Image (cartoon, rainbow, N blue to C red):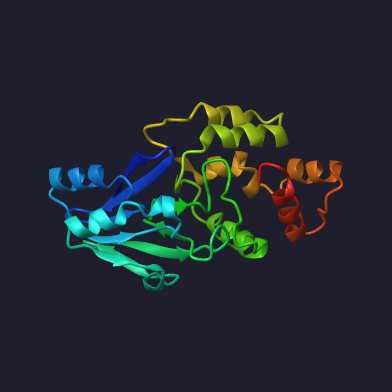
Length: 235
């Protein structure tokens, strides 16, 4: 079974090291010095360096990791949807999730998904591509994973996201419970928890539909609900 270490760098970025018994893969490895130290302390070999997408704040560790190890860089073309990346006997499954960016990818380990800027804890990323339908399909795909799947995002936006969520659903007790789960040293939530509080996973839920109705926003179809939700300030 694969393990995952999370590292903070910059203002709010999160880097990851996925590893088995001997082999490892860095994802958005901006905290490259901490990653190298962990590799050394645990006698691990870095096989791969990859990114959830190519935005500059996710790639600053690539050069140092590649220079100081014999790892292979996996660019977007090397990450087709469904690719299986093996570390020892365990695998990581690549999911292409366009929406935030055209090259957005998520990495599924069997117990967790590293989601980059596609899905945050409590919110989602900006749709810089402008393709709202592609983003919807990506989010719906992530929603199909087992409820206990851990969501490991590209940034720690936990408290800011809840401030927006509570504006949309002020009566939600689940949002306050979610607030109490925050651990800055281990920023993660389960998909089950996200489905209860993340407005962008709740576009088919009655409170969100009623909110859209109250604002005279289109809400008859799933696509309309998604587009209307994305149009509200804070999306």
